[in-house]
Length: 292
Image (cartoon, rainbow, N blue to C red; front, side, top):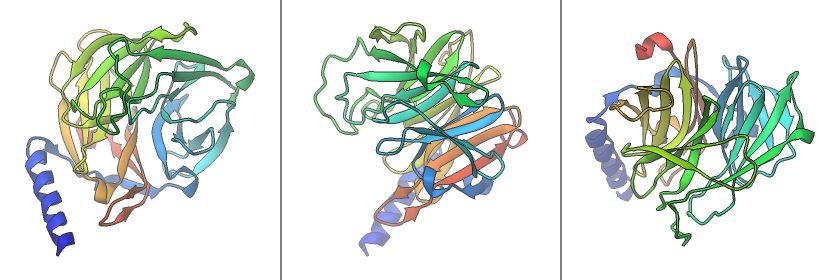
């Protein structure tokens, strides 16, 4: 009986909230279950047309090249970085940037992005550098597990800067900051703009003057927002296109997004709930299906 009540409550909340969004059933675009080695995938990124992912905290400090048609692992790239809590991946065409800045409790004061040159399909680990940063607005580091506004899981590279988009558990918003990838002393993140998403942002991708962000709510609703770039590096001047993708109970805990000329790739890590366990799924939405 308790399970039935919980299911009804989840359905009610999902239905009520999703009515405010364009309903787009991600489940229809599932193409694979990810390998056990990447069941905690926490992001996706294209580098020279090849698709890469990684696992978050508690896993090896490795990048994985995966087949974009099947999700199968094609290559494993080992790094010399520490995986305290990797949450995002981007690149500038010469270097990978790995975001070790997961901060669910809001207590971290040593946020890092590893910059690793990538040549001939090999990481140049001997040339790795560390970019350290902090939020000037954060004054309190008291533990507020999944109730902080200074968590972070999303990052893109654009116009010579690293752009990060916070995961704000309390405000259900995201704040856009920039970081200088050529500064290796501890630097303040530069606040640019904020947007009320009504969900926590777990990954971002930029393509063809559009910013794509995915995330979810504590009620397991999963969303995709698509923003137009109104001026260079500015995304929140206009309302986004807001799509409800489904429940994490069926599509997984969505943590990764990457976009190219063919469409949108989305990955989810395994998801455990009192009701069911969901596998780490991999999805592809053709460009024409999103009417981009």
